[in-house]
Length: 231
Image (spheres, rainbow, N blue to C red):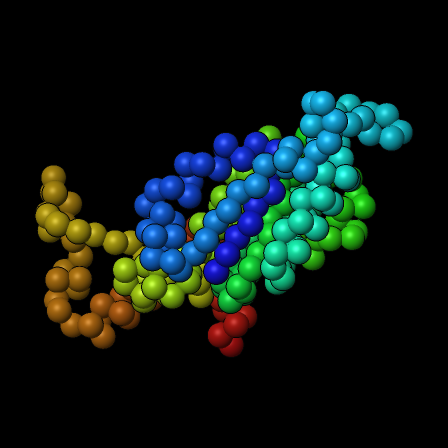
């Protein structure tokens, strides 16, 4: 799977993709992440990528020409399953969407900045707009990193234990159950006996019970969604 990312500040994305799981995924050849500086496609002495908004108002807008040039240059090299714009008014990124995107081969990500991109870019090129939450970031780079991480870890072979992703929180609309490791007792706090029993059926039933109860208390919205899907 390949991600191409267009960014005004590509240096912001150097660290997230060069460590841990995503680094190993790239070394294995399971994932490719390529970050492209938007100023490379800008013209003029200062390679300006933003300008004042028509109609006035505070803030600058990302110009149409360098973004179009960047997208079209990348599209000449390969076909993209999705051209995604990270935007506060996009669809909410959730586990279901991550699962869907993990089945794609090539994704192009456009990171917003300033007051956003010229609307004509969204109309002409963008196939999907994605938001990671109801808040505003300084730019779309962090949102892009979140999306790549959430999707990339689902690619078969990326995680050492291929069943691990199946039991993540949100994978079945439930929060994950509590987990424990050694020592079995710490400062008077003990690991539940059932986890030491060796009985897989009992342990699975306990974990489901814990997931249901944790979701009911902490995320009643998810709990209701789960119940509707299991009527």
